[in-house]
Every structure is written in structure tokens, then in C-alpha cells.
Image (cartoon, rainbow, N blue to C red; front, side, top):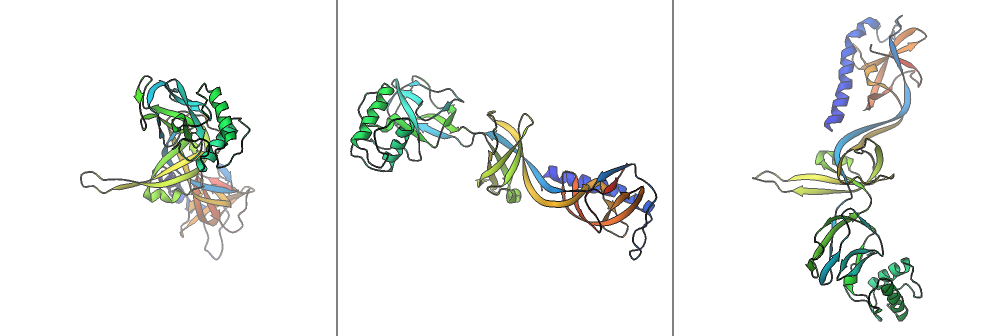
Length: 350
């Protein structure tokens, strides 16, 4: 259990202990006779509510954009243009310039690994043609064959980019990514000479993500698809969903045992503006009880015969009702007991 959640529950239990001494004032009768009403109205009361209780564990996390990947040059030449760190690059835009010619970002899972020209066939041809179509070029069929009509569309594309109109595509002219990218860091500078395989920059996705490293004893919280709440640096709370949870093992040093963390990645389900890298607090759901009766934890009384009760306040009179407790969450506790219903008043310690 997270230390912050443990402290909250402990505080509630201490509150129960603090009022235990007051039980004698209620003049409880034997179990066969039932509780005896006490003719005294408490100073303050609270309602019994019917609600969904959610117990959350808070863990420190980091706001960012996920893991960065390296963009490398496939050609040889001089770097003549680079995007700014933090900039967003979308399909059809230059991700960098080499010898004053753009290297264009396209979308897809396959890397550019060969020259595409008339007669070439394969899944990489179809991927390129889908991008060409998305950029507005027409007159060809999107399929796995690079035909003469595709070559004609490529010449139109090259003309628009002020490239030599060859009708074929060299792998050094394009870079593929899953979607739009954010430039996380530059690995080179304008004027540098690069060759095939030289790192140019590191990029991430454009959507903010939160990451948390959980200890293995909290790994039960890291279920893919589970909802969480993230408190952002500006104090706002944003909903999110766990999209990935992987075990990361760090080797021990000086003979110490290896340590394992569960690395959790969270995608926001509402719009969250980019704030760079910042600390956040992530609230995981440790337990949930829908449609239950609940009272403030401080309303619980420790009964002399054991267990807990609540002091019901009704029309100026009070009585004690024994209860079974369930989930504790956010200062409230689930209760069940004879005759209890939502809207009843319970006494609170003054």
C-alpha cells in the first residue's frame, strides 16, 4: 500500500479510537434487548450517502512525450537545415535538410531501405503510395507495384519540393514515422558532415504522456486499459488510461540484488497541453465499490462488545446501530447495518 494512502486510512482508524471512550455515554443495552435511545442531539451530523467509493493510491510520475527514437541520415552530405527542439513535424514536411534538399517525413511502420522506381514491387511501395495520395497527388493506383503512373506522380511531388524530377525515390529522401513527431533533441548541427547511419535528431510522439515507475508490490495496479487520474503541474486533474506496463530490471551494484520496476505509460483521454518534462502525481485505482452506503470515517464508533457502530440521529433522539465496514476511501467508509438507508443522519465528533 502506498504510504500516502496508508496514512489516510490510519488517520481514520485513529479517529475511531478517539471516540471509543464516549461509548459509555450511549448506555448500550444487551444484545437481546437492542440499543437504548439516548436523549441527546449531537453538536454536528453527517448524511449517510449511497455512492461509488474509489480507493486510490498516489504515485509520483513524469509528464513527457514517451520514449524518443533516433532519426538517422540515409544519405551522405552536409546538414543545411534542422528543426528547432520542441518543434512538430508532420507528413510531407522536412525533418531536416541535406545539401540544401529536404528529407521528407512520411507515415508508416516500414523503414525506407531501397530505391523505389518503375517495376519495383512490395509493401514499401504501397506504403509510399498511400503517403503520396494523402499529400494530394493523383493519377495512380495505391497498390504494391510502382508503375509509370506512380513515377509521374513522384515527378510532380519532386517538382513541388524543388528536387530533380527523376520519377524515382531514393531512401535518403524520406524518413518514416508512425505519425507526426516532436523534436526532442538534436544530435548534430547545421554544417556538420553526415553519412548513412549518422544520428541527426531524436523525436517522440506529439501527444503528452505520463510515466510512472512502480515497485513490484504495486504492480497489481498496472493493468492495461485501466483508468487513472493525473494531477498536472498547474494543479488540474486529467483523466488517463494505462496503455503499456513493462518490467524494467536494473542490475545491482557492489553485490546488491537486481531491482525491478514496473514502467507504466499513461495516455490522456482529454486534451492536455504540452508542458515539457515535469513532475506529476498519478492516482491509481486500488479498489472500487459501486452503489454502497457510506459515512465519514470519523462517524465510526468502537463498540464495547467489539466491532463498529454509528450513532443515528432521528427527530432529536439518537441510537447506536452496529455496522460492518467495507472499503475505506477519501475519508469515507462503506457500511452495512440493519435499517440503514441513504439520507439518515449520523453523529460526528465535536
